[in-house]
Image (cartoon, rainbow, N blue to C red):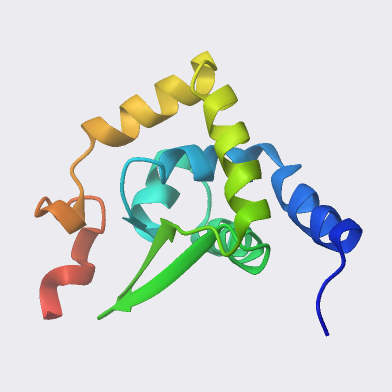
Length: 127
């Protein structure tokens, strides 16, 4: 059964109504990232970050891909409504000083997916 517009908006807006989830979307704007990168940048526990990412995925904003031991998330709106809401949110968040500092800190840290390895710690040792 196709989801009605009101139900679709409710689901997506509820997902966007959390400051941590908004920050996660801003952090994923430049490129896909593994959960460990996001966890380190936000200084939150991995299960907490994973729960927020799952909510955003269920709402149609993200896609995930398993790469060995890692789960990598990327912005991938599932439909026009998700794409429009995401575009509006990211255009507004780009001017927020707190979000700018968070993204800058994330970009300055070594990233496993781009060859650094430090963000994911010892997880890469067996692969």
